[in-house]
Length: 297
Image (cartoon, rainbow, N blue to C red; front, side, top):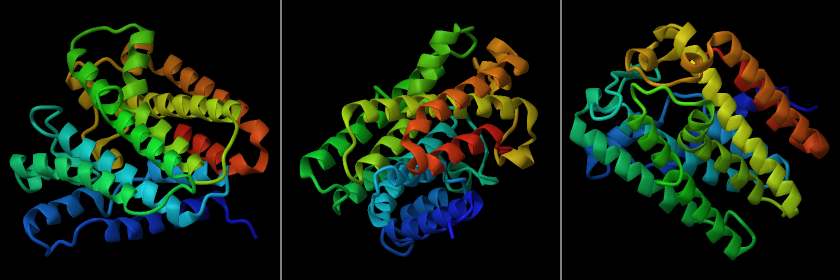
């Protein structure tokens, strides 16, 4: 019997947690305080959306679960590092993440900085320590893709634009450009790398899935902006209303809640329409898309 989406999601979240437990250095391994803080930042929290996307992408190409676990862990470590740095006083200066004190509050700023640095390098170490593709050249290309999604032409570049945009009113294309990089690049990479862990698809199919990843990344951000406006801190696990308090441009500040909701629906439908030709192999990715638009935290 095929598992329900909730059962599948719970299974992937559990196996990701177990895989991360093994992927991270032990807390008692020197330097113990740094390793303890790395584990604090990564384990026991979060929806694991990116690992879920990795596994959903892998379903399209029959990828081995063990390979998907390794890619998922690498991406989740990069995501966690970005949150640690994002919460620091020099960035968003937040005190709460995933319902517990942020790393610089629980430890100190210097440790938080090193946690982010170490998690990023641990991610690349992890993805290079085992085979995730039958083709060595493809595996190198996958690692390059992850690096690009993480760096100045991806997540870090988007964060730089975000910091430079405080107090400004961006146009919709400018806001989209920022979030294609800041939030979308790693989400896009999650799907693409999961797909590449299995058998190959043709260029047209890969282009379609790359577009789906771009759309899902934007959808995630639109919903995040709506939740930042409407949900409370206890529900979100992070400080609610932070974007408005910091005078950051968001989809809600630009479009209003009603139009932002409409945009989310349009993005969701675009992704679902493009996944339809893949048939049953895209089931989990389609379900995840619907989950993202209706998520409450």
